Length: 219
Image (cartoon, rainbow, N blue to C red; front, side, top):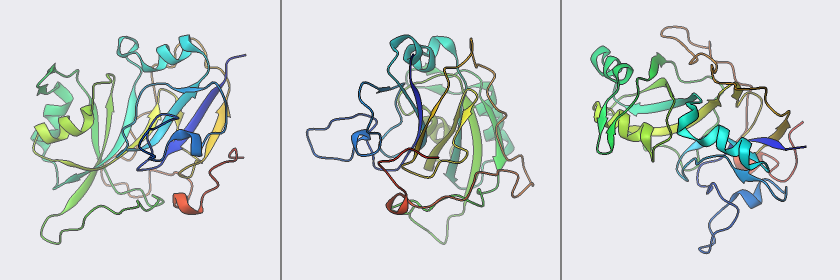
């Protein structure tokens, strides 16, 4: 029976099981043989990463051709204008071509968000804000390039969901095994936290990686 694992990947961990430079890898978090990451989540990004031992399932999750939605919580420099958000909804042109239209909305900082180590650099003169952004592609560093293209660089990037699977209940470094998905979970959850509803994003309270059990399955 194919295995499917959902992991809350912490900042600074490579989305692979080995590294010849001695950097933190998935091997320190997921002691399961034969599973591989379904797509990437860069070292400087956090959040949901799916792993499986089934090649067809990995392809189904990771392939841009399947257009499986992925929602990100994005802390950006500045406060995005209506025009910037509308540009993301229409699609922006990057060096490798135009993006597909995205779903985006403003959100309050999640109340139960875990601290990042190291923290995002604080600059008193420059405000920051959060958006929830859903894309159906998987280009290299796409979200960061999209927000930069509309004038609001990404400071912190957390993947909240892949299709119908979410981070809910997973502290950084924790994982759980879930059942094989049905046909095509391609609708995905709505991007969380619409404007003005502080607390409408409700992940369970989590702890930093250093206090989370990294070699045991989340219960």
